[in-house]
Amino acid sequence: MLYEAQPNFYYCGPAATRNALSVQGKNINVDDMAKEMGTTEAGTNSINDITPVLNKETGKNDAYRSVEISTPDADAKQTDTLRADIVRTVDDGRAVVANIAGTSVDTDGNAHSYEGGHYISVVGYRDNGNTVTIADSADPNQAAYQISVEHLADWIATRGYATS
Image 1: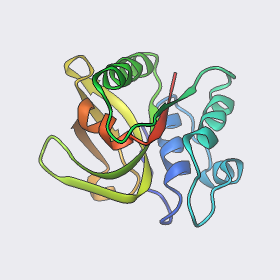
Image 2: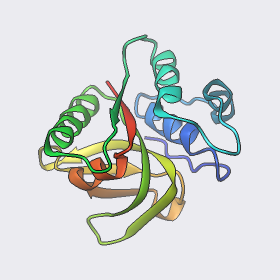
Image 3: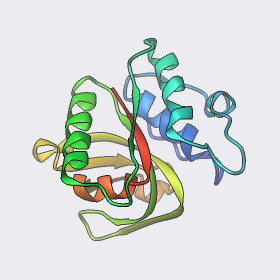
Image 4: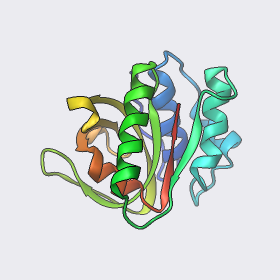
């Protein structure tokens, strides 16, 4: 993967999408993607603005689909679905893009806080998908970290993710 930090505070959607596509060997311009997603200084509205760009750049209309976790906390079924989606997507040579909000703690005990919302890429997993690898465009000093899939599901809660 060719990690790239976001160039400004509101480009997390295009940057997460670019990092996800780099797993497939693609190097897409973030400014072009931002235009397609309708990204403004207020950010990118929803995962539903990112999924069509992932499909276009992957070259298949149905390569990615949006999944919402609309509840305030993810339940066991939603967490199991997320785990299965991450394992399948990564095994297919792709990455998941997730829209997150709030604060979560990685496996090293470091807090990552995005109260206003943020987009990240999920680029790997271990332990049957119970621990996932995040590529985070916000801070090049913490570009990649591991998090439990339960924490990730709760981080996504009230929002959604794009998966294959």
